[in-house]
Length: 352
Ligand SMILES: NC(=O)c1ccc[n+]([C@@H]2O[C@H](COP(=O)([O-])OP(=O)(O)OC[C@H]3O[C@@H](n4cnc5c(N)ncnc54)[C@H](O)[C@@H]3O)[C@@H](O)[C@H]2O)c1
Ligand SMILES: CC(C)[C@H](C(=O)O)[C@@H](O)C(=O)O
Ligand SMILES: [Mg+2]
Image (cartoon, rainbow, N blue to C red; front, side, top):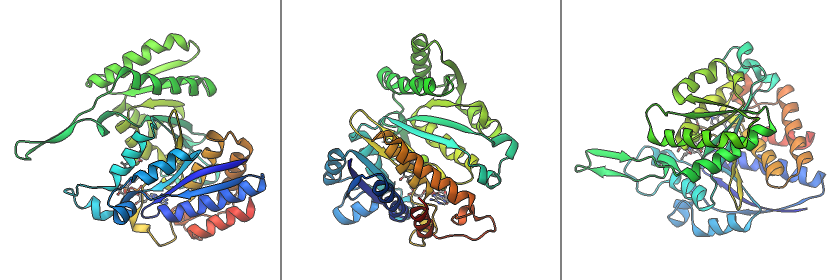
């Protein structure tokens, strides 16, 4: 099979972790007789430096022409520390998600048996955790009206959702629950927010279409607590954009490192695969970042975008093997030898 993949490495550790995912993808493609045609395109601060905008039209065209997109990370301290910057790398990420119509961000959280002691949480609480967030990705406060009033003394961001936006995300949630343990949790703040009441009302109305799915409705503040207290009590969680952003970073602590958690962003026309972490600027250029979140995002790409399950399983298996054998970057070393980002990538290729 010929796979056309747009490659958006981005900023900071983006290019380093993407390099490992490319090496591993090429190796798995060779093993299973596929050919990957990578088309690299600019995004983030790198694109601002090169052409003045974070998601240039050329990049959008490359994403639209490809069968799938593999994304690293964007963001640079130069913008993080300058709130007045008008053009920002993150705008590129949001524009890309919106223009590609990537409304459903699938963010699994799971544990690796060999890393159970890497989590600061108690082993007996987290063992066997296997849950998945479906984060709405193209609506809510990220895309609402925002601005300043009162000579800049007052700022506002507005959160808006339409019933259809909630429905299409919830539909994916119900479908995913049917494939898994038939348990769905709708995370909201319906005791306060009108958008959350629309979420709850919409999901409640859909329950009768999926009589086998047991649905619970929980407030986001309580979920934030129970997620680290009893993560095993969850299976599929659906939530709006900002809640999903925050809860998934929190959930990454269960696995032991932010550098481990992959994601898939799904739309009607295309899909994009990216680690949930950012550009981790402190590690940029040092060859120390954990590449596994990006490698596992590539596995999600084989599975979700191309229906190539054996290929995805091969990647997951070699990742598990590397962890079991202690071939880990410094975030997971825990007093053991820390391997470089590129050494982990090389090991995965050799052992695939
Ligand atoms: N999707 C994205 O591209 C994305 C996501 C989040 C943040 N950002 C951007 O990234 C920049 C830095 O943001 P931040 O520091 O809040 O978040 P971050 O995810 O880049 O880093 C937070 C912490 O997580 C850990 N971490 C992250 N990735 C890791 C990896 N691969 N291996 C090992 N440890 C890892 C590190 O301890 C790091 O200090 C900002 O400009 C932000 O806007 C981009
Ligand atoms: C960088 C930022 C805009 C982004 C988000 O908030 O969606 C990031 O935190 C993520 O999780 O991908
Ligand atoms: Mg985030």
